[in-house]
Image (cartoon, rainbow, N blue to C red):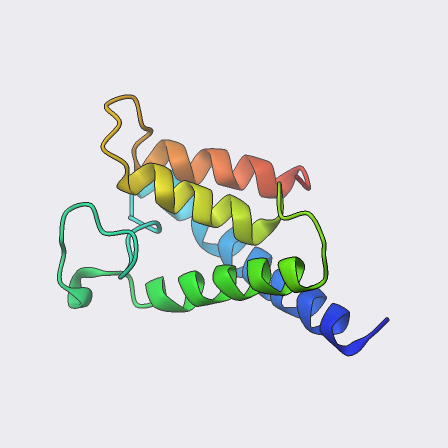
Length: 114
């Protein structure tokens, strides 16, 4: 196992554990895990984001970057799943899921290892 692979495994594990810790509450309360400086459909000021919003975004981006650098598929990875949820939340699509449903769907994906 090379250094980048070890770093990727550690970062993905950290992101997965953080999400598994916060998503159950978000699925119940509707707390918005998916708004951050990059995905901000309501043009909220940064002090309205969750305190961990930027850390989650940064971690997900780093996971995807390392996977791409290693030539690994990003589809279904924890970073790509989180970013996909952020993207759906920020989209103008009238059929998009709200924060509760997005959190529940992401939690389900992570709990089943996809």
